Image 1 (tube, rainbow, N blue to C red):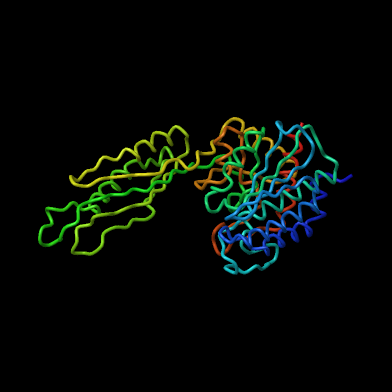
Image 2: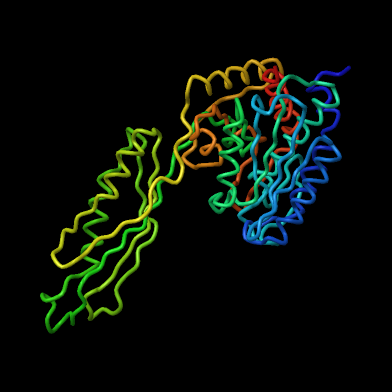
Length: 378
């Protein structure tokens, strides 16, 4: 009987075909008809390759979601793999093409390459008759790229049933490092109300919402702390009506990133506590923590240690790193479940027009995931 990596290398062409089928089934997050069609393709491939239990979870305004199961272990001791099949690309926005051993196209890297290696990891375990006391749940959602509001409760509920979480999201370019930590996110909207008057006749009788907004932004930016990994980005601003009118209203959208949960709480409180600087203006701010960070805990480092041992046996270098972006791995880590991310294949161009995956890497990444599952099935 072949070992895992040999089996996967022998099926590299089949893996490439799986990836191409998923990429050709374009799945923009906000196009339910297309995402549902891609979900049907995904479900069909799972049935063909793995043949375990596949449950479709219907959604009204986004694509349907899927809960696939491998093995028959105790549900309270399950391993969870989470992924998404929606992409940021409108239909036809990117061409699908192969150049040598590289496949370009929408979702190749983020994250249909990761879905492909998961399907083939599970297929290989089944083909080699590898089972254990735990079942594996493969949860695939359809709205990660637009905030996971339709899947968050499902993800957190499934995570609480799980001992470990593996996330085959895009790896870190260019060397394919896995992600042992991710920043958390806070999202806020700052609204300022002032008093409108003629800017030339009686400007001192007014109270400019734009002036107040500028002062608020300068004050909030003081919370930036590169050493601690806390960053504040003022993403959009708007306000006012005419150049000769003192602005009655202005607003800004704010993005907060942080590495530590403790920093999230303190910084969020500082953002929300906004007294006005200018008499006659009123400041309102709404929002809060969207996702807690995925921190590099001892349990996460243990998972990385397992991966490096597996990778060494494959003569495959594997580094680790951190990401400033968030994923659904933040949600599972946020409820206290050890989570390792970035398990997808080597590639580049997530959310960029050069999005691609290195096809020759598919068997190795599938082998890493399959071996990691195998080690943790008991």
